[in-house]
Image (cartoon, rainbow, N blue to C red; front, side, top):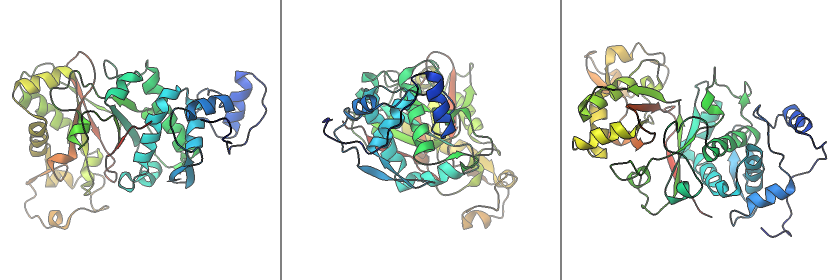
Length: 354
């Protein structure tokens, strides 16, 4: 970025100690509670130099505070989160995706449900910046995953204004509200990558945002067939306490297969579409069970469901096989994960551009 371009944010003079800087940011509610990297003008300019965008360009107003999500504000929060400048194009693409009306960021930010935007990064750019997709990919230890996810959360706090108990009304929240970013394990994916399944080209690098609960583990050390593994996955998908019981028209689920489970499923001759159809046909609950769920009668159950007389009829948790997204992530071990969504938010994907 040209040094002649002026930044709009004000500057303050602080004592040059970590304690003083953190105290100031905590006092002004600019911190997620963890130590921050001071967003000096030099650091912000370095972050902005990673993309060819006007710093004052706004990607839209971010709920629930409805402040303008300018490129400069995103860069400041990316610095604070500890990001390298090479991560910034991912952050910008993720914010563009979250501000798509289909994602319903207002609902994601303000709900009492413990939902957080999960970022799924795919393509060559994920490898270029060192995004992690192997063992412990949803956990700590990898700077790109940790700081990209943290930057998005700080943007949701500082630009969006969703603070716990004020704007963010999550009853209990979840640890993934600190950071929730992962790369797809494409080397161990037996099918086309997720972004290709969602309509993008293999050569594209993308960010997919998914309004998500935390991962629900699927432990299967015994099954040697696709049907066996996926039956266990379907069992984890169908619980009364999960949001799948809402039966709103926007419900989706994300199935994150570990590489060993994915390989076993592929050896059974299953395509990605076969996995989706199996889960659609088997992740079902009897109507009488669904009516015991904690959201029955409150939200928009389809009229045809309320008209059903046979309470033993088994109904799917989503409206189509396409609403069950399938990807591979993780390392060795016979574990997978089901990630439910918050039912009022749809998955959105954007290309990463520099």
